[in-house]
Length: 310
Length: 273
Image (tube, rainbow over all chains, first blue to last red; front, side, top):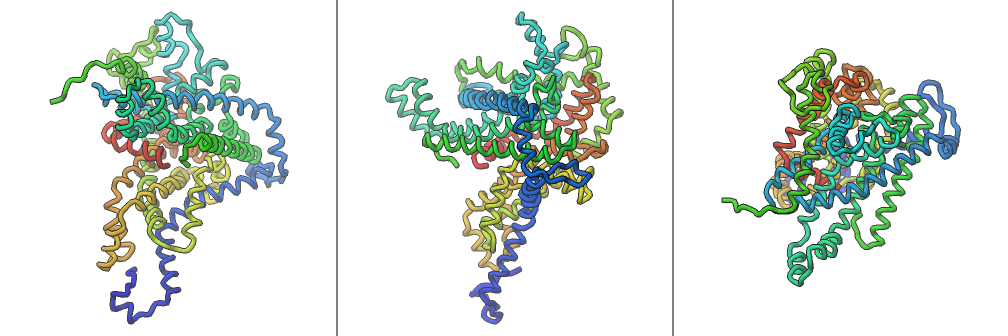
């Protein structure tokens, strides 16, 4: 597919109209970009539009669907299971996002020191991120087992009463949040570590020369420099928390007494356990809308505070 | 000669934290080598008295775990290779070639990043059912053939590459395809490695999608097989931990050997993704 150039003798002989050349250039371009574009559009934009039509029907996937307009959405607003699931997702997000950001910053600062064993510490702290959420969930079931798990053993040594952890309706969601943090803090830490290393050394040195204490350097130089990254980690971790599924599936499956049934888990149950496809799709659209608003909210708030990232 | 650094109070924070992160994984490995009797002892023990292989033996003989492992390897391999080929081509197309509809197509691709899997799983399942590929391994890897993130990553990389080399190749008579294959791709090795690590991590560890798409237990991926196995045998801890080792060890070993590459991938997907 040799291109023609004014310098080559062919160009003079074979007169290619500018239009013909543009068409050929487009063909080459689409030959490169087409396959991946087709896959991405066919596996996300197209299903997303279809999901909207499904969400306006009552359908079990086998018999023909019955169009019901907006009634799936209206029913969701008063569905007690949906409201409970939304509460659980909200609680999980509110617990998970700030703690992963704070932990990420603290651990990144610690890992940014030039001290012995730092390579060992880094490896240890990043390794859980590589383990799958499914394996993490199964492992957590063992560690937090009320009868012979390591968690209760530690509590016993500290003289604290034994706990039920994942088997207690009042504790399970908190334990899941803790496990999710164990798996995800590595990611936040890596991001903050990279951001810390981007802070110009002169800035810190100048402040120290001017007599700023370590705390003031942290408060007035490090933290503001980390703000743009924090907008990103905030958005990213919010999405992670809202979409948490694998961990719940392999620890509690929404139990005990539905106490860890999040919106995502509820959608899965609606669509693939009880075959209520229309209702499930409506719940998924609602979740999508709320996530978009949350994301937009975080970005808007950060813009107002003066950091431009997106 | 390395200068000995003075003891730092940061150790007091880092040491317990590091142990907290790594000890559960150590316990996972050790437990996979224990007998059931040892696991059910009270108080619990961390170190097995001797190397018991019952967990592994039971897992491999009573479940198709090896098959699941093979399925996961296959799905991840196809995913990584397809990503490398398709996303680097598309990234190059969007970065360097001018064609009708380029701007719009790229905009659409970037917009799809926001669409969550929960929205896609119902129609994608129905679509695959109509194509007749539900419950085959194809249904597990087709969603991983290309991604918006991959296209975006490669495009950003090619945009940052100096264009002079390609121009020189073109003047020497190289066509677009040959310029891409022999000049551009060799330069793109770091970006390709990042893309490979990213795709490997996400396709190997995926549970939700194969859980929906596959119900025949000979076609399970490792993650689905384990989740399913756990649902049936909640108390066979040595077998469960053996399965966990099988599912996590390959990536953990890869991480230990290529830590820099993994961290660069995490950083990239964070700062630019």
